[in-house]
Length: 88
Image (cartoon, rainbow, N blue to C red; front, side):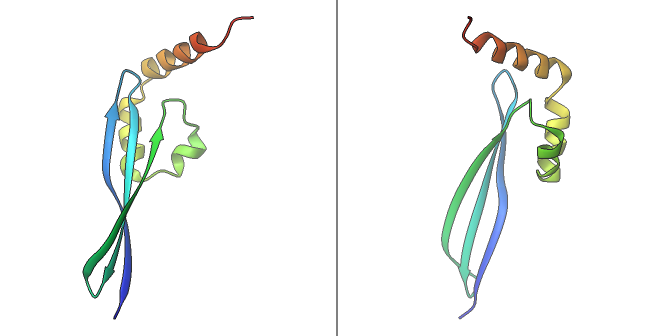
């Protein structure tokens, strides 16, 4: 009876005005090749992600970020964050 575990990014979506990248990772446990369990983990990649953190993402996510996180989107997102700060 052999147990194996596979982890794949099975869904990557771009959402909203600021092109937030949502990443779903599936972990599948199989016994003798038959799936017995599947669980999911989600995380988001925001336009203000650091270069170091982006380097830790998959090649697919890095490629998508390069396309959708344009300077215009990053500037708009930074302005949005600034507008959310309480004024003194």
